[in-house]
Amino acid sequence: MPVSDYQVFARRFRPLSFDEVVGQEAVTRTLANAVAGGRVAQAYLFAGPRGVGKTSVARILAKALNCSQGPTVTPCGECDNCRAIAAGNDTDVLEIDGASHRGIDDVRELRERVRFAPGHSPYKIYIIDEVHMLTAEAFNALLKTLEEPPSHVVFVFATTRLDKVPPTVVSRCQRFIFKRIATAAIEDKLRVIAEKEGLNVEPQALSLIARRAAGSMRDAESLFDQVIAFAGDEITPRDVERTLGLVAAEAVEKLASAALAADGAAALRAVDALVREGADLVQAVYQLVEYLRDLMVLAAAPDEPDLVDVSGDELEKLRAVAAQQSPATLLNVINVFLEAAGPMSRVLSPRLVLEYATLKAARIRNLLPIEDLLKASGGEEETIAAEPLEGVPAPGPAPAAPTEVSKSLTETWQRVLSALGESDKALRALVAPARIISFTEDEFRLGFPEKYRVSAEKVGEEERRASLAEAVGAVLGRPVTIRGEREAGAPASSASDGTLFRDMPLVTEIRDRYGGEIVEEKEVTAPEEES
Image 1: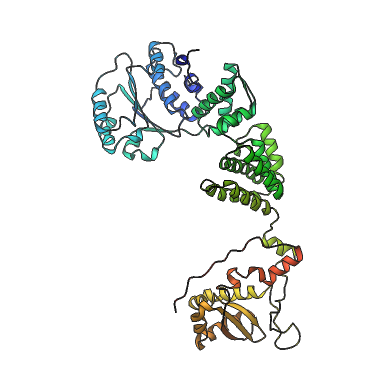
Image 2: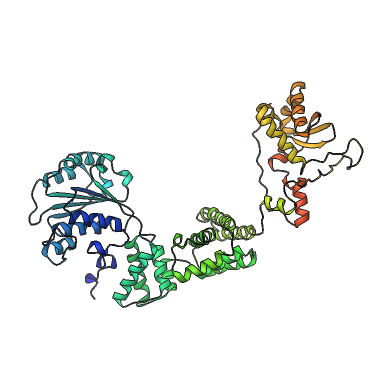
């Protein structure tokens, strides 16, 4: 076939009637009923993503109105008018590109032309694509014509950016919203094309193309054309991956499986295999996130298969994997890889970023929420004795023994801060950087980092010290005295802000009991205090 005679799938398999339009049933049914009932508006606005049928439906509407047997819901497609409209050379159906005819002079010319009656058809139809590209002046010039158009004129505006069309224009049109086409519907249309073309295409290959099209039938048909040019009449999933620059699905699934199984070594081997194959690592992460997203949805809603765009066999495989995962784990793993995607596209070594993210994701499964650990250790009511600190006598009958409180020193201090937050916010701000050095039956010793020496001095003033003692006494249920002191070289934060997290008695007990380790600590430093 000569190159000049070849028509791409997007043109050759363009729908020719309302019934052939895929995925826009609400739109086509409404328009067909309007034609059948003689209730045709004089201005329509079709809005939606690219490649979902806006211009095709506009042409079908034009044929339905101007067919020699019409107006009719089923244009014949054989008369001179139908043929001319399909070929795009009908003098009474004018298609205008809004991007290249966007100025006021173009619209003024259009206003002059609409006054003339159609040459050989019932209607003169103007289809303006990407109408949002018109200038503000052009839109204003168009308004008068839209308010009082000649009875023989029908406008059809198409746009991918409804938000950029002035409300004054929108209000003068019947508005139709075109939605993205479901992956299954695109897959069905591609299967029909394959059958008509005599192609042998594996179902998984069609599924890959349909998913990559992201709801656009035109994109799907263009991608299919591209794959056929590479693979010929026998098309496998691997052909699609190579043509479209995708990472092999098996490689993505191996990486996900290793991360979810907490197998760091296997995860690193999976990354190494991607590198050896010359895969685009950023693309691999995007595909990995899509795969994990499907697992997360099926783990959270196993009875809602319509929430994932996959074929039957693939759906069952996903369900089997998702059944062994918790939505919370999958959510955290997805978050790790999403955080990695951005830096990977900007660094010289995306492999390092991916390896880091992969190992981090592999450790998530072994982490348990602190609430679960508490429940496992006896519930929230369990009492843990505060551990003796250096220089403080061990528990015993002596008056200076540390007092046992619910769970830990840190919790007691947090309860004090919470009480101050309700009664004296200024005092709370002063003592927030402090930590409890020790306390006995009747005395609390607070330590302030050197950088908060001014806070230590202010808390030492009699009135503030008395207020703090009252707050602590209310928490403990007995009167106490407060002693604040500066700690030379102490960290510029406290157990309450997480810096001494690993030294908290509760954390120590959990680590000893369950053999755990602290993976990461984050320090939040309070603002510098002016002296």
